[in-house]
Length: 239
Image (tube, rainbow, N blue to C red):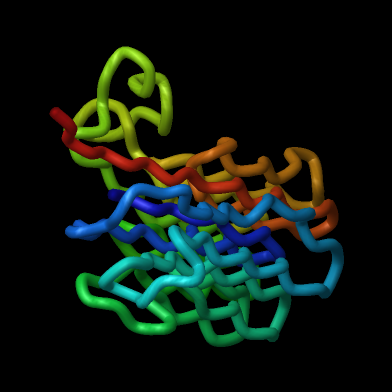
């Protein structure tokens, strides 16, 4: 089942999306089982980094990969010369080092790195399907990395409204947050990522779409957007 955890908050660079994990856990006995989804948080202000997300876990007392699946919180975006945080996907930065994705490492990868912007913009946060964008110090905020479209096995009448639209239709999750820009804000990645701020605060950063695990948009003069709580989806057969 896919597990996307809450994204990180923006802070100049866009927040990284929460990790996206899938897996098949065979041989589980009848539950109940505990499912933990990290809550969303508040965006950063001024020179502060965005706050990284919290892990989401299916069956916290189980064995990872056998009876337990963990998706790591996204990395907070870096402000000024500070580095973006690493996480499920990494946070972007302005003039620091972008955060790494897939931290800690899982196979297949749960996410991607953020990107570095420049003096006039923040880099985009990484998404589950791609790295954050870098606009090479041209004042355009870096785009958030694209998320991932969840498998069709989870789509039915009750769940079809979850996620956001993307290039191949709907049901996208875990998009990175866009970076702040002096010329134009960076757009959030498909999968719920928030848009960055248009400095000096005439257009504020937006929060990620709830229950997508997307990263918040990067802020500057105004607070960055909040990261989104994620979602845990479980498909099972019965007779």
